[in-house]
Amino acid sequence: MNHLLIMLPILIPLYGAILSLFCWRSVRVQLYIGILTQVCLLVASFLLLFDVNESGIRTTQIGSWPAPYGITLVADLFSAMIVITSAITGMAVYLFSIKGLDKARQTFGYYPVLLVLQLGVSGACLTGDLFNLFVWFEVLLMCCFVLIALGGTKPQLEGAIKYVTINILATSFLLAGIGIVYGTMGSLNMAELALLVRMPVAHPALINMAGMFFLIAFGIKAAIFPLFFWLPAAYHTPPIAISAFIAGIITKVGMYAFIRLFTLIFVTDQELTIPLFTVLAGFTMVIGVLGAASQNDFRKILSFHIVSQIGYMLMGLALFTPLALAGSIYFIIHNILVKTNLFLISGVVAHRHGTFALKKLGGLYLQQPILSVLFFISAFSLAGIPPFSGFWGKFMLAKAGFEIGSFTIVLVSLAVSLMTIFSMTKIWNEVFWKKKPEQEPLLDVVPQQKLRDNRQLYLPVGIMTVFILLIGLYAEPVVAMAQLAAEQLLNSKLYINAVLKR
Amino acid sequence: MEFLLPFLIGILFSASLYLILHRHFFKLILGLILFSLATNLFLFVIGRLTRGGSAIIGQDENVAVEPFADPVPQALLLTAIVIGFGIQSFTIVLIKRVYQSFGTTDLDDMNTTDQIEEHH
Image (tube, rainbow over all chains, first blue to last red):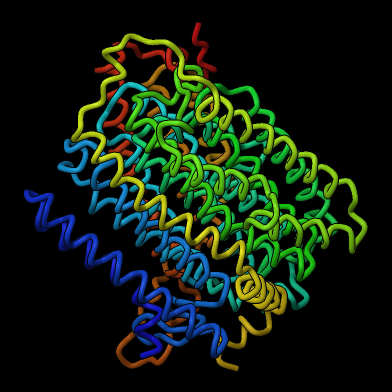
């Protein structure tokens, strides 16, 4: 049963996707299969998280090949938390797509591809094998390629070409890094590698070099400075249902793999990596937030903020204390939810008013007060105003920074928080607060059917907001879980013993 | 022969980067294909080369006879090649679509998604 529990987050979307492919002609059937799949995935992830929380790290061997030889699936608290957050996000995005995505895209395989993307996310989080990690990343990247290009409008194609090119390069770097690791250590099992690097090894420099290959590969995938330029060029181009999921999840999965590998395997040369990560984290935060400040488009501001928030997650890894890593983990969970929700809200706005440009929008506080409140909660969470969720993540990171005396990075992060408030205030003022600019009266008339559809889009946004409020106002269990997860990350003996059964 | 392979890989990597940095679509495709080819070769060589010994265990033996080639890098390589094929074919179709809708072969014409939109 426990083995099945780890497999379920992978199996459920796989079967869902295959079934939906069989029902290619009927979007309605695909929709029902999809909703069923999402519900099952959510339940399975909850069970997995509950199980891992109760009884520690869970592992299973695919095909019953013993540990260092076969492919291992490992679920610890960190991966289980990401899986459940991704399931929640997937559910919301799915509900949003029913009315928020045009019929043509729905007909051409949007639902199966989204399910395969979720399969890739679960796989990348749960695998305990380095090469298998590469394969799962290929699975989810392929789906991202298809989703970004789906529909084939001009901006989408342009965004897709940038995204595809840079990601093929990143993947090749990842593969080269895996090659070096196998060449020097003779293993691909992450637990065995963790064991091997902690013994005296023949070529410590080569392991470092492999680490740098992984840094570049996941640096591109997670959009770390200076490798983030593709993100603001690509993420805002597809329809909002697609970019909400990709923007919410994919960079964070990259960050997940990054944190996993640099706490488990590439820990041998921390005199190099910790200052390097600190500098990268600082620049990622600052450049991201400055980029956001210069934009005038709802989605582009949010895209740049992804980059800035990645900096906070990296900051936790750079400080490398239990509290800092807990902060990072909490921040990843918070950020997936909040970022997806903000994208969905921008989608609701654009669905009703037909534009993302701040200058053309206005007066939404009068027209859609509920949406304004929902945006307000998410935006303040992102900026880190207590008692919303972003505050706790930033608080833990700042406290950890002060504890070990890294004042500069803490000050940078606090300054970036202020800038985030500035960006969110800008959206608030322009979209919700200011008077609606004069335009031709024809554009102001919205058909009844569209208004009804628009109201249905509130449901996923509402669900996400509930979760955001939950992890913000009732933060204690989540923070405690993040701290436990951080301890599991830092105490790699737990991971090694769980996988190798020693 | 073996000492030539690192140089070959190096040349492949530099040639592919040179091609990727060009502005023409076709050179971009060629560059990407060469880049993954170079990576695959790198993966193959760094897994150590052993000639003439396959890791097949004979009927009356318990273990394979040394020296034998490590089968793991070969398996990885095969997987990587297959995945690479899929992605390359997607890229080629994508670039064809881009060419059809933009009517250009110059990557420098594609800079609109980065620009800050001004509304007057």
